[in-house]
Amino acid sequence: MFKKFLAGSLALFMAASFAAVDINKATVADLDSIKGIGPATSAKMLDERKAAPFKDWADLIQRVPGIGDKRATKLSAQGLTVNGDAFKPVVKPVVEKMAKEKKPVETKLAPPTK
Figure 1: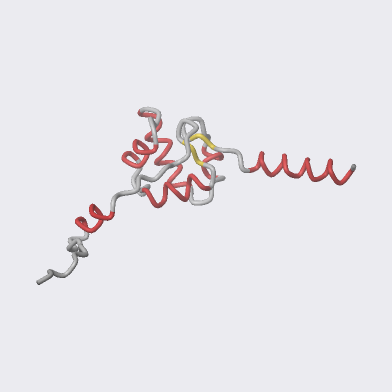
Figure 2: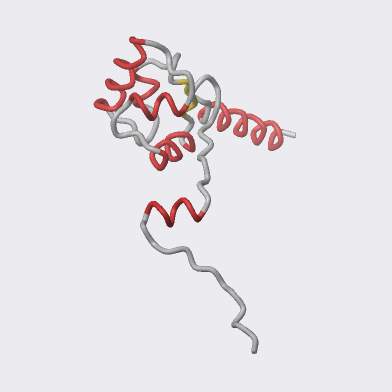
């Protein structure tokens, strides 16, 4: 019985330690506690938040220099949220990616028949 209680208490503690930190409500200490956010980044975030709360992840990425899709994914995995939402990256179709890289799109056509 004691082992079950101990295991349950440990699980509850672990869940509480990974609690989400909402950027619109977070203090400097809250932001600095997230792996990947240091004093400079938290200062930029708080300065932008003073102007207006962040609407969503796209707003955060647009307004805070140094935050892009890749970094937003990592910060979200560490517990950062915007209005309670985790970051959901937008998957671009392969054609758009190839056009951006200026590579021709390969198409597989059957050879002509005689």
